Image 1 (cartoon, rainbow, N blue to C red):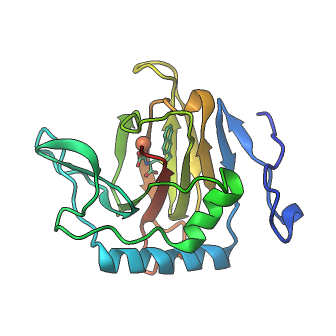
Image 2 (cartoon, rainbow, N blue to C red):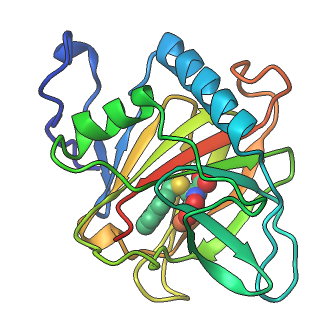
Amino acid sequence: MKILENPQQSRIEPTARPAAADLGGAKLFSGWLSPEEQRGLVEAVRAVAEAAPFFTPVTPWGKPMSVRMTSAGRYGWVTDRKGYRYSATHPDGMDWPAIPAPVLAIWRDLVSADREPDCCLVNFYREGARMGLHQDRDEADFSWPVLSVSLGDDALFRIGGTTRGGKTRSVWLRSGDVLLLGGEARLAYHGIDRTEAGTSTLLPKGGRINLTLRVVD
Ligand code: MD3
Ligand code: FE
């Protein structure tokens, strides 16, 4: 596994930040966030969920997903019987809250200070929740990477190539890990096979939260 240069430039203690491991174009920054930063992000997510409650997405085929979702930013990602899409409003009708500052700071440090993400999708995995292999391709410009932040219980993440049915690799994502999906990995098939309950004390009732930041249009 190739160890890449730490792209982080503007931090107070840059040497305290780990380097990234390369998973075929996906860069995994293991332990990027300190426990204190993780707690701050959980508080920020709590505020987002108070303004825009978690909902159970339903696939266009009518099957409820096991992951609960909400979003922050100009757009949220939603799915229902009408299909999946980015929407400027929550299913209950309200605007999405702003993306919290500590979340934007991660994007600024690892992706760009010139362009903010349009969407922060918040996925909540209770015990037993999973996400099947899929591509993220509802965005207009694939030259922007997707950034993912893991909080809470460990998750078994699987990533393959850009075609379905090819070889895949699995890696555990742990609380405080940040994953950057750019380049060849941007259109890779990926999913969460399972989470491991009891592996983190960050969320008082357990479970896992994943934040994904995307430029949409
Ligand atoms: C690889 N979420 O919301 S994050 C999703 O942990 C999603 O909740 C998973 O896949 C989760 O769409 C995986 C890691 C991730 C996110 C976006 C990607 C991997 C990606 C986009 C392209 C390739
Ligand atoms: Fe995805």
